[in-house]
Image (tube, rainbow, N blue to C red; front, side, top):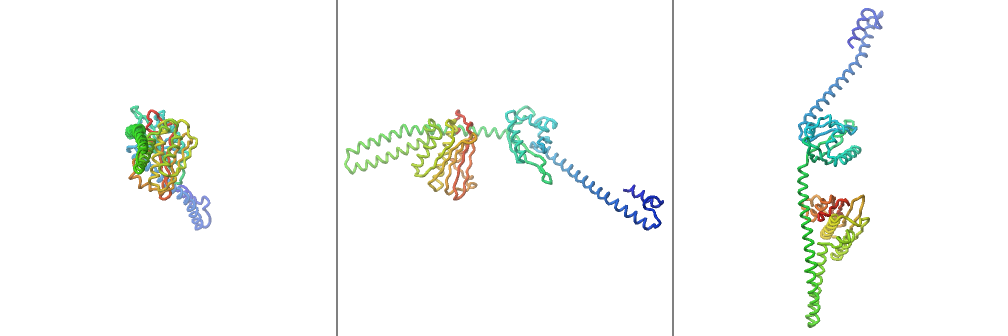
Length: 404
């Protein structure tokens, strides 16, 4: 612009160019207008260039601060672009894996994942990426010393100022110690439930084979004694005999709840149907039981798990719901076995109940955890409660039967 102004002015002074003529005032005015219209775009362009330089500098400084913070963070941090390929790993990640950033970027980071976890990890990553959803995955990552460590990895999508998708940023932490503690606790829970089932079986047999038989003999002897007594005394003995039969029936029912031979010999569906019928008669309630597509043969721990969940759920519903009608559904879908127990009673506040859960609820949750099952409760005040349990059909382990 300075060069243009100098040449234009020199030409006008020396009588050269478009700004020469007989009237010097018009020549000066034309020259000023020309320089004004020529200079304004250059000034605007210069301002835009300066703004862009400042913005680029601010972005560069912001990125430097981010990298400085990320490199000193105790967590493993990564970033990826819109093509799913990773573009950044912080120094903590590189120190953990013992690899260079060139080895990790792109899909190179997946080489450090345990072969058994790699495909599931990549499937979760790609599926979340395609849906622009938060991702959460656990996998084993090889450390610099060759040991595989459990990693909890959480990623979230990034968006630019114009809301266009810019990739993902994630943070990962080593949870190996937590996983080890969970394994120990799971082993303790498994042994406790095994001991509980063994004690249930022992007590059930004692009640059925000893106490129940003795009460039956007592009732028979009372019946024989009744025939040789006066009428008034005979009526009293008859009443005692009736009460003895009721006690024997109650003990037999309790024995069946503690240990179900039908579950062992006839399968889950028959055992559930039988229990619902006996519970309905004993508690004087109505139970609508329906089952659909249940496999004929299930691992023992899965069958026992779902049977115990049914028992506990019905007992809780009968005790707290305030209604006498219940609905039980059992079905198989997509390789999972599902069970729901529903009532339309008083319901409860789930948030308030979390602080004071009973052992029954804890027991159901622990049993389901041991067979990789899921447990949920949907309850609303005065609108009823639905308990839902689901277990992968192939998750059982008969060697740990009580885990169900």
